Image 1 (cartoon, rainbow, N blue to C red):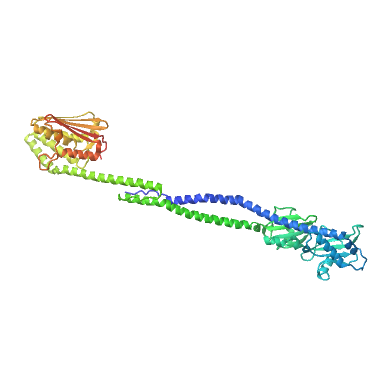
Image 2 (cartoon, rainbow, N blue to C red):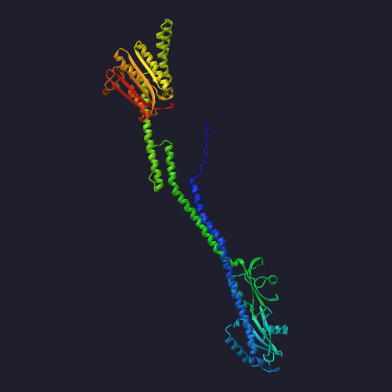
Length: 578
């Protein structure tokens, strides 16, 4: 017979492990979503706000430096000492120390003055004489540098715009006008240290690739404090919007965060470009820590899931192993004491079931032994059926040949009785129809034996009773007892009645005779095999009824001496042959 393979089932351990991992992934996914959707954007905004703060501080310091230079120019114009020096006749000498002390007073009283922002300060008189108020190398490199600016911008004057020079220097070039007559008597030239004013190095310590650019409002590049070439910076500045804090421009192939501010009181722009990667570098560090924490949490959750699954499922696995051993036939196996309440309930229920099955097995085993013993007892009383059939057939043929038809009928009934017994040898149960046929054959033979002095009656109220089942040789031994123990001692024949009816889901069978009866207190006990009658019928019937139906089947015997005996057999309705 081909075995049908059952579909492969999923592992409870794997399912629980997946469930626990998914249960841990849900909050992790929520945390990642929150981080990317809210925290990241907030952190990015905070980083850009920090960048704006730094650039605003740079804008403020630069504007302050420019305003300080403008204030210094106004102070020089209004100073009497400077006015006297600028309006002196051609070739007249000037008290240089007096001019220096005058500038020193201005530095002393102006708290915003930063001497590091100004490299040199020169006054050029109307006659071309140069007066140095601040600087260290006035007669050498510095002087030639300032003189070149003076010669180039002799006709230029502005207190709002710087002019470029050599290197990183830029210059304020202003006409010196008499504040009383407004006549021009020379020029004031400030040489400014632009990198120091812009404080680019301080910004680049925070953002190494930051670019700080100083330009005029007309787009002329004055100072480029970055690693980017001037041409690229000029091209970017040409397309920038003033006061744009949100635009990002591609500079050097990198996305830049651009801030622009106009210097207060000047026609100057300060542009700051900050690489976005450096602005949010701290975010990547935070993200790395966050992701590392999530990975560690996931590993920890996975480890805990494996451990929890092992702790929770090991009792179930052990229970399954124990059940498999019982399924293999080991009824002595029992579950050990469990440490969890739920598994302890399973173990207790299993052990109770095992005890019950063990008891049922023992009971069934004992009943089987007793049932087999009763069958052996029946077989012991039987003779080889083939021999009997052959003998009876021989007798029947001689009777017919001799014309003894009555004897032939008796022989035929005996053969049919024996043949019915042979046909039902391997069956535990017979229908009432088969059992009553046994009874009729037997009573016919006994009637012939009693020379028709025996009368019998077989009666049933409904034909449906005949289809129900009962243990074989149950009614016939009771009828035999009625004849052998009731009527034979009387020696005058008698009457046997067999009646069947259905009542309360049971079949009632009443066997009654009018024989000698007996004392109910002294019901015949089984005798030895050497006696004339062994009296094994009643114990045998009771044993088989108990084995098959338990207390639902009964056999009651009532008798009155010299009046007769009644046997009442009660059997549950049984519609199954086996």
